[in-house]
Length: 189
Image (cartoon, rainbow, N blue to C red):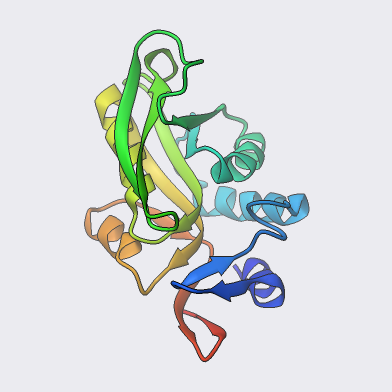
């Protein structure tokens, strides 16, 4: 998506460890108009896919997920990290490793929010190794629901997440794919 790629080139910064900082418009301060354009773009891409819920992980996925849920006119569910105490009753739980923060944590969703009839679109800001997405897929499978698509704002194409998800047969739409960081420059695929 050219609009997103242009924004990344204008405002993104490459940090140590192949980390792309986009906190001025995507995951700290949020450019709502950009998110709306991304959601409309995703709606067009997934136009023939039946979707009845959108799923993401707190916290960075919530802003994107909210706008997508509005455009798709479906509820948003976000997995809570570290078995939040305010989740009542039974929960689906999955263990996730964070590439960015080099930590592991549990994500959880109340069992009353997912069922076997659900057709889920997963959305998230970044895809590196795919750990968060696979954690969400695990929860969806526990519920007997179906992953009908995955939308990612920024895929790091030089890491394995996108390649693995595609090889596993998932309908993955990455709105921007970074091929590499070279000499302080962001090179898109």
